[in-house]
Image 1 (cartoon, rainbow, N blue to C red):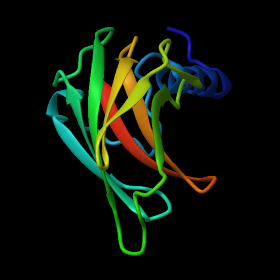
Image 2: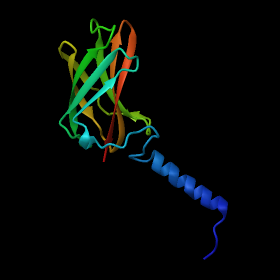
Image 3: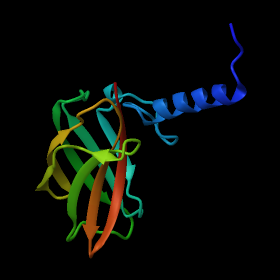
Image 4: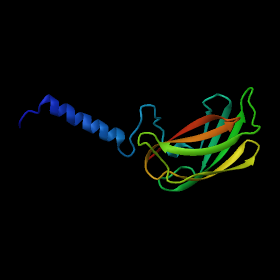
Amino acid sequence: MAAKSPVLVAVLAMSWILTVAMGCGGKSENEPTTSAATHEAQVATSDGGAFQVKLKTLPAPLETNEHFRLTVQITALEGASLEGIEVTADADMPAHGHGMNTKPITSKTGDGQYEVEGFLFHMPGYWELYVDIMRAGQRERATFSFNLD
């Protein structure tokens, strides 16, 4: 058997790394390793620190290529208010550079409570789900992570 050149070995190794990183289900370096099956409810603080967001997926656990909806509870943290907020939600696969094939619709169901319908994770892999809270022209975002097998 002929010896392989170090350059060929390096090229093959880099090709394999890029295939794993960019292929379906590829992970980003900050991605958690939990499965969607463990996610019945999650809580996150918005990136500006003004809101705590709790969400639950219905149904749980999530399945690839199956529609689901969210129930969302938003709590104002110290100094913030729920007065005049608008809430939207969306998701994407950062490692792939694309989002969902559907557009979710948000409905207010109570004070700080929302239901979002129209989610569909159409392929397995790492997804980020975003709940955006608009207040006085400023956006705060809570990010939730899901891994689908």
